Amino acid sequence: MFDDYKYQRMRSALPANDPMHAVLGPLEHRDFVREFTRDGGPLAGLSMAAAIPVYTALKAAGLLKARSPASWDEIFAGYEGLFSGLRDRRKPPQQERPQYASSANN
Image (cartoon, rainbow, N blue to C red; front, side):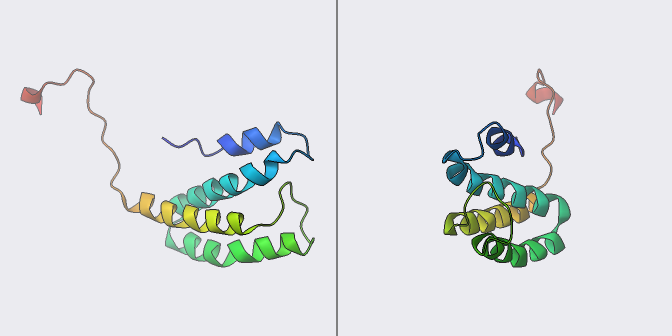
């Protein structure tokens, strides 16, 4: 099971000028886009496909206040999250089996 907010919690515990933001930023972006796409479906994925490069360009231009610098890693991690979210959406839900079920009961 994914912890969708793990990297966000890690980053919020760091000081604003910590260089680890550049490392954790792309991971947080990947997880955000994966969750958004998984929960929102193909239309959410389509909007994210357009938003990822625009967001990074706005950060690079200094028009957005951000904790991490704009980077190619951020863009690639965003698209990785996009495809992962769409893939997760296509998987059938896992059915939990009783802990002590025997093969005779199945």
